[in-house]
Image 1 (tube, rainbow, N blue to C red):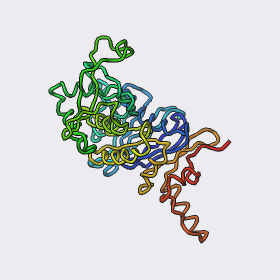
Image 2: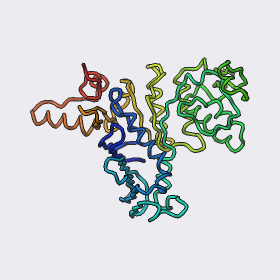
Image 3: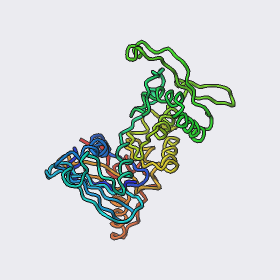
Image 4: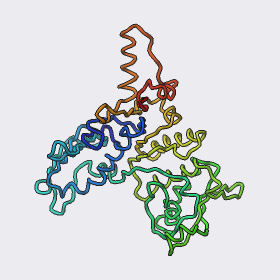
Length: 362
């Protein structure tokens, strides 16, 4: 699990550090740097394999008890610097690798060192997911051999058909169904049926057949097709497929999980996300503009990060617990005032501007 991420010179992130939890929430106005933080973690995924071939990159592994620190930097002071600490269990040791001429093997593969596998699991599967339930309502092409889920879940029907039809992947389909029964008990089966595509889809996939997606209630003997299901239920299914895909991410980056979800269903989505993190041992970092999502973090303010920009356009980040609540209460005690409970009405305090992370008034 990532414990600390420090980033310098990545887009608007000139110098920020976040001490992360199992599930983390990034709040702030549009263009404050929340997505840039997620993109910085994607940057590690894209560039991790390329580091051995680059002559100007330093990759440092520092073993500190049950955590590892990874530092990526170019020689140029203005280039991107990313410093990551994550948990694992191993003996204490340290590694420093500069380029392929020094420590890396001749074939350009990162040397087999302790903690490397955990590092790869974290970074190589990291991408920003933004499931769109509306993409699942129409029939989808099958026969695409899809074994990964698109970031917007637009290929979910093709993915499920592949998992169901391949004997080596049937266990993945079975796990998705089992998790569905746990999370949405009214449904016990994922159903796929032949369907006619729209003219636009047929033009995009002229050689493919198409199927529609549904969920079946075995007791009632009724299948509810995607256009009859709630957006929240389709979102659950998309997340289940993302987590259960053959090479699932250990670090799940989510953009605005409330998008397309009715406000009354957001609590269900958030309960599922917290449960997902524990049951599947997945670390989650998500952004939001929704006050209902924030309220679900009222008992864990240490997992909320407030993004703002300074006058020069650089992002600065404050942790809700250590940088906002604790200093506020400490200052009030010094002044002989009562402490302020900012978490009881967390979303209201955010909307009123007491926490920061809101658009400035012109």
